[in-house]
Image (cartoon, rainbow, N blue to C red; front, side, top):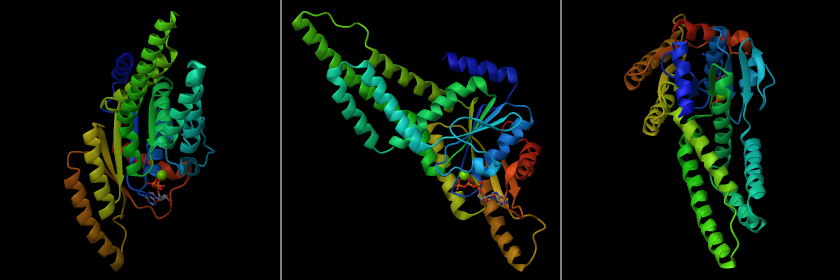
Length: 332
Ligand SMILES: Nc1ncnc2c1ncn2[C@@H]1O[C@H](COP(=O)(O)OP(=O)(O)OP(=O)(O)O)[C@@H](O)[C@H]1O
Ligand SMILES: [Mg+2]
């Protein structure tokens, strides 16, 4: 609640529009998510916003694109721009060890075996890597908020990201389950203590720890689902599969209540492209552009032309950044 109030106050002070604090860029594999999210982050930084660009893609390329050695700690890429890359496997290992350590440190030695069992079970369960990735994302969302004006997430291809965004729900259930089990154990201990005539420790730190985790997820979830704070932008190409995948993803995001911001139609054939082959492609493209117009009718859309070369380095993304800025994309 406090976080929300704090965030809202900040938003109002900055006089911003919808979803200006946290921006996600998603879409099908290879459509230009990294290019567009990096360009957006560069445009924000150039406007004087202290910006953090985070990659949650296991196949990181934000660092490659901006030609900086990015890692789990933020690295400066330009004035007002920092870059971080989350490594899901590393996050997963660290997360489980941390939780295990915490729980073991707090639980009575008699329960350690149960803690080990629970955590190994959690490590093997589907989505454990994503849970860890999400935990890192939650940390970034909650801690970077006070340090940065804007946070831009470059995400992995659609399905992976959607699972990630649905995780607060799942994690909530998981923590609830742990809490319920913990209650039962406590009950048992209370009974044993009563029978043995020993008073119990009134402070249950494990319970506290789990509650804290639950509250952290709840805060992050609140931020993610608040249209005044978060926007999920789609990057797509004027091609059949890219449109279909984004349309499906959009339905899911709506179902989860994640606010959708805008659509970047990337790699549109430029007007000056000529020749019989390109003329045919342009005909096809026209149909897809119309379809995009219809399917995403209620969202702001901008077009980025296909460039003659791959986009590389800060100078490479500058052209796309200028375009995003000129069109007032997102909160620019
Ligand atoms: N408008 C464009 N014109 C020319 N090349 C582009 C354009 N947009 C992106 N590219 C190039 O296409 C390739 C893929 O782009 P990018 O890495 O941004 O996609 P992605 O969606 O992040 O991919 P992945 O799903 O693998 O993470 C890169 O080589 C990039 O330079
Ligand atoms: Mg990418």
